[in-house]
Image 1 (tube, rainbow, N blue to C red):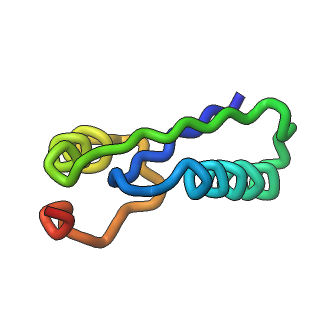
Image 2: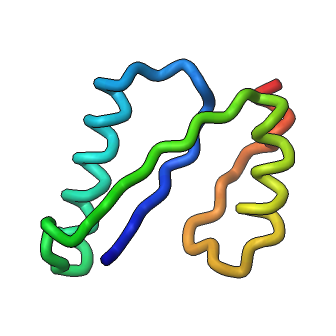
Length: 77
């Protein structure tokens, strides 16, 4: 543990997703000093339309956000 889920718009390659997962995991090791062998990373893809509801649930209504985005999710439509 920890487990990270990266949510992004569809269209990135598997290589891009792997690179992002590796870099996020490395940043977490640097930030909190956890064992890199304990980190898991998932990537979930969304269409712009799917992202509208996901953004509401995962960002707008979440009480667990530590870094808030500064964009309107409708801008990705």
